[in-house]
Image (cartoon, rainbow, N blue to C red; front, side, top):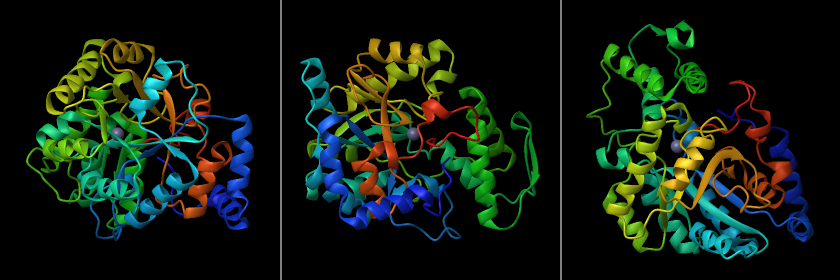
Length: 365
Ligand SMILES: [Zn+2]
């Protein structure tokens, strides 16, 4: 997970560039020599809750509604927002993308994407792609990582014992401290295989008597298929984010292929347009590998996004592992604007080149 809170050097530099009024000129100069595709990655758009009262993962909140609207207005004004399917068509035709092309994407499929983000996108006139985990939309069950955070925040157990991660610690009463522990668990568990992750969460659900199966918490709810269809009718796009939101590269081959194919079959059945877009669940460059890319292509997907930070200088060369720019809730308007205008300088460090272990895995929800 990223370390949120104070914006740090990038944030301050971004605000400085922004307030200097030079940002757009710098962007214009940059566009002369760099025509890279920028893809923004969001999760949830919702008002920032009181951390002491909120029972789920704060890190999944990408931006509050008013800021999101400002961000979309900026994209509309200074960039060329484009649908990913139109980008696929341009790549197929061998056409260069226009300068300053930006695609807006969302991962997971939370219902705030329908309630809050979609009306703003419609109002401003910016297209977007929603990568959804089809199993969660089918079942309505909360997302596993979010539920894990929920359990660690609320359990009455006095200790957190996770031998598979080498964790055996007392659980403090203060929620902020528990949040830090939960963040650490999320980070470490991504080094387990996907079944190991599921088994660990299932064991905690049983031990702590906090089953997610029937839970329908209002703050952690997937959208429904009816909502997805309504969004699709309004011109928004959908893609696969797997069935169960598992790390595809950490599944046995047959399970990995099944996740990819089943998610496509479900999307093709539930929605009008065939699913040709994919985003690999869970962050970083360990979430996918050559076998995952092959299975994605063979299943009929025509483009896929990773959660590795960066822009795409030649998207035809990495159209099954496109880099994205994650939007985080601690980005002020200046930092966001600077990240879009000068992404190499102002985005979070690129995980692909720096990921040597859990301590540096900057893009991981
Ligand atoms: Zn996800």
